[in-house]
Amino acid sequence: MIPSKNATPQHWLSLANADWKTQMKHLIQSPDQLRDFLNLSDRQINEINRASQLFPMAITPYYASLIDTKDPQCPIRAQAVPTIRETDFASADIEDPLAEDHDSPVPGITHRYPDRVLLVVSQMCAMFCRHCTRKRSVGDETHTPSKDSLKNAIQYIRDTPGIRDVLISGGDPFLLSTKRLDWILTELNGIEHVEIVRIGTRTPVVLPQRIDDELVNMLKKHHPVWVNTHFNHPREVTAESKKALRKLADAGIPLGNQSVLLRDVNDCPLIMQNLVHRMVQNRVRPYYMYQCDLSRGIEHFRTSVSKGIEIMEMLIGHTSGFAVPTYVVDAPGGGGKIPLTPQYLISMGTRKVVLRNYEGVICLYSEPPQKESSCPADCQYCDDLTPKSKPTPKGSKWATNVGVGKLFDDSNNVIAIVPENLERVQRREENYQENHQENINDGEKND
Ligand SMILES: *Cc1c(COP(=O)(O)O)cnc(C)c1O
Ligand code: SF4
Image (tube, rainbow, N blue to C red):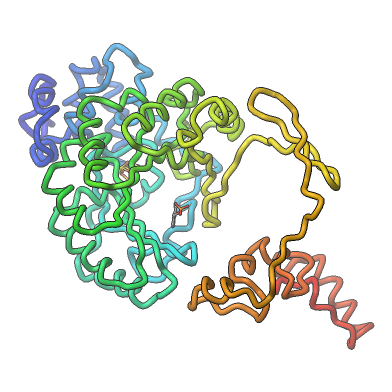
């Protein structure tokens, strides 16, 4: 079955630089459209069909035109064309590994960190990346939020004064009409406590023609707007994508890049170094390099964590500091992003810190004779800079009053952070309460 007239590669290849709406009307959604181009057998066509029943296939003519048809390992092809391995569900796989649906106060919002939220505005993408972590919902148009649902999500942001940063995500937000996006940004702009908005989009990579004058002129009205994109391989940096990045940067939009570490695509220090160099040449700051999540059907893309550490070892110090992304594991269960780096702290004495550098040189940093800085309890900055929405105990600082910071905060007597319902502690407290009712020590509890 051939769904549209752009069945032959000649036809869709002729659209590789067409405007974005034309390309969206001629997405490659059936493996038959790739049969001649990739020299696919009936068995391969059948496998692609099976895989795309779990997660649909959609490739823009532009991105498909970047495939090296002679290379079965082509990194562009690996990200775009389904394989039968997507139907293997590995034992470690989780439907919603980041608990994004769980940490959601209202539909469309994931509120994980106190000061920032993820706002999902679309479930459509120009291309469905085979490694997508949100396969469970992306591509299902019935999941794309209605205007009423968006209003409701924006109302949550309006009602929650602690939120200063809104991350607009999807799907791909740039697949909404410019008008709809303009409305969302206008609503967010009108909320006093929202200081910045950032948009995550893969269009500069898979549909760079989307970054047109109408779009950037609209975005410019809503500054400060930041944009994060998703380049995974240097071959994705083409004349067309450079033009898109230039338009965004010229509109005063700070650009970041979030790559995913993918087996047989970019799990190589040389490829990553080349990618980050191309990013900074185009005014894009490498932001995160993600360890591949545990989402269903992407196990064949996962690398070991040690591969990520090895790549960081080859980047840090070897290239410009601002070309080095932060390597993160998004914690399964919803704990947020956890940064990982090679070890540079080798040892410490009371007055001395022993460090190593990227070349293997081991050096000594002497601590100052006077270690204490004066930090008066009644410091004016503490009062002025602590967010009003974050009341803190007297003498405490909000910034140190969270997580491990509690152990640094002198205004409490916390000496350990202990998981709730820890069996060992329950055992001990029961005994303790029985024998010494009057001497309960709160010092070892969580708060
Ligand atoms: C990644 C993410 C953010 C933003 O985190 P940053 O480290 O500030 O980029 C916010 N909310 C959710 C749910 C996220 O996954
Ligand atoms: S653009 Fe992003 S959300 Fe869309 S399929 Fe690719 S990774 Fe998933």
